[in-house]
Length: 313
Image (tube, rainbow, N blue to C red; front, side, top):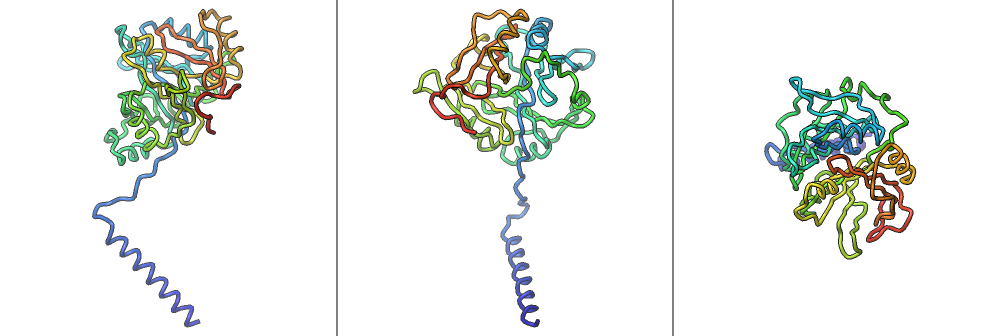
């Protein structure tokens, strides 16, 4: 019994000594690393238009999405929302004022804890807001700029917000797709983008490919705690507005691209393009809204062997 007590006393003293040494060697003012909270998927994409009624005909009439609410400030419409599912929207801003203006407003990813993610990014040297101000829609979130200057929003759904009050509603059978599976943006410096999205945010490369087997034009980077991805659009030099609209795009997952093509053309969409199998081995069909923003219908699984690299799960 005395031996057990002595061993217990020795172990306790040793643990206290280790804790003391650890405290003495930690730099003054040092804090424990901030843990990154989950980033679970694409929350929305924000796009600009110069004709809201035509945009409504496309996103509502052709694609079949309902418009559950809009957001205004001082009586001025800021944006309107087309609901893809309870956690994903297409936000349309009637603020396209000149032909050369980028049609992309921003991209947004959902997180489970916006405040913790703000603190985490700040600890990694990313310029973040000093605090989270209340959002007009009742959710929590903040914006940063990625290395290419794109506005990237991180978004946390909150009880009582415009969005959460509509959970389970405005989900008609007319929707051509029930999920945004990726968004794409132009990337000029892949290494810089990787440092931001991969090293800091934890996105994971799942595929890369190009117009030829010897060139990489696209890189798919999956969110760390979900299945959606961001697509780097590489090798884009001095694009005109129409080409930039092709590059800054969204992809809607569908079980059948051919069925999606038939549905949208039956609703009046006219296209010179037809469904095709892309370099990633997946069926796809490119559509364009009235301001050239590309909306890609895509089957999630390849039907042919992808070029250039395997698709990682």
